[in-house]
Length: 290
Image (cartoon, rainbow, N blue to C red; front, side, top):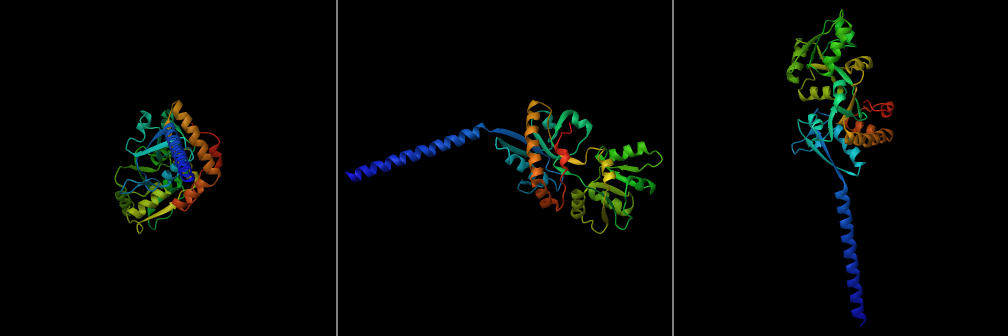
């Protein structure tokens, strides 16, 4: 009789345990089903801010920051894909946020919300080896130097503004969409005199194209960086649609970005990927740029 009672007790415990497991499973499934899916897009560049390996795995500073942001927003499930439609897809409603080292410009700000910044851009002059380091745009103008730049990019725009404001000290601009390897060779050959890129990208170009013996990097001063940035583009941001949903998501993302700035997480990620501090100043986390 005691044996039968013991068996019955064990069976009862098994039933209770199974019910407990089933309940927890249903609870977890219910919790997952209540999560909102965020559709995020990236072009998978520029290297080294964003990289994609042969298996399609994303990495880089921008991605590491993005992943940490949404690890602190457990109410969301994120689907991040690589696409050339990473900007216009947000405008059309296909994506909820774009992750692509975006800088600020007034035209873009009309259509998109900007998050708080997560990276401060540090620019370099890229010159042929042995050339006297440039110190400013004024220096480049006085030397009669020619800049190689893509039409419409931040650097070209900044130099165009410089030329408008200094008609007697203009910098020549060679507009080009040639491959970077070709432009680096043109600098080495003296056909053009310099390019300007942010430091991690410039360093990556030197290493990728084996230009260590022909090209040197020289830091751009804070004053010249502001000129290049047209006063606002020295930082990188996430872009979101300019609607109610985009406004809410931006508010949540911004709250986490400020936390990551204040608790040192941004600095830690910056040190990991750049071995340098590229974290925006704390004043950038008080008010959005648009």
